[in-house]
Length: 108
Image (cartoon, rainbow, N blue to C red):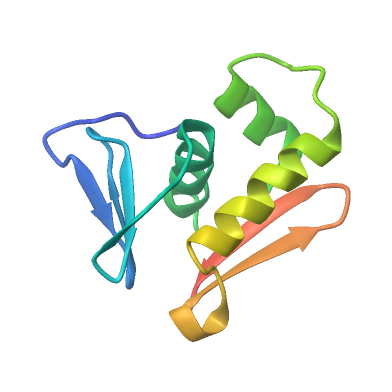
């Protein structure tokens, strides 16, 4: 499940930082304008780095129910997270789409 704020209230990766209390993400020390669901998706992906996360798990975790969302809705959210946090190899991270199954984020 998605991590909740605790005494360790933030998670820091090589270039991305997530403050789980304030809900603010940053890239190389600069705040990134993520919408709440985008923030939650990013935290879920980073918390499960190296694992394949099914589309169904993401929708259940983020929307808290089995939503009647089109796959385009989830794809659009993932696309925005990928672009805003620059999830690409030159930032030591890779977000892969596993067709019809889900997504996998790898810290390089």
